[in-house]
Image 1 (cartoon, one colour):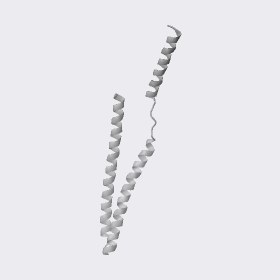
Image 2 (tube, helix red, strand yellow; image 1 turned 45 degrees about the vertical axis):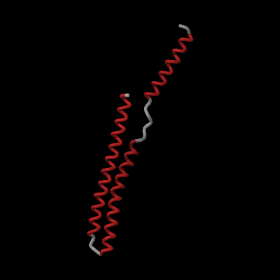
Image 3 (cartoon, rainbow, N blue to C red; image 1 turned 90 degrees about the horizontal axis):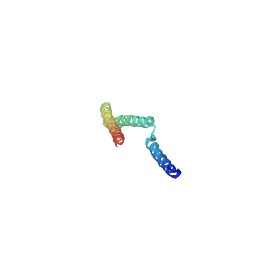
Length: 111
């Protein structure tokens, strides 16, 4: 073997090693802690917003009709139900997103 052949083979080997290292390099991660905290705050805000809107509507109706706080109680309960429903929808959305990410990782691992 000549020195030129050996240098050429070494250069090719170096290129393959660089490509292999690049493929094995971990992808930059978004800090999961903050994204999970943001999702949790979103769910809390949705629940509180439902309660607040229900309180506002119920209190307003009680003032207009001059009734006991029956509308306020009724609309607070309706607001709570709406907030919980919205929270569950958000949780389902988050779960579907996580499952899609896991499926994508599995597909990359196989491919």
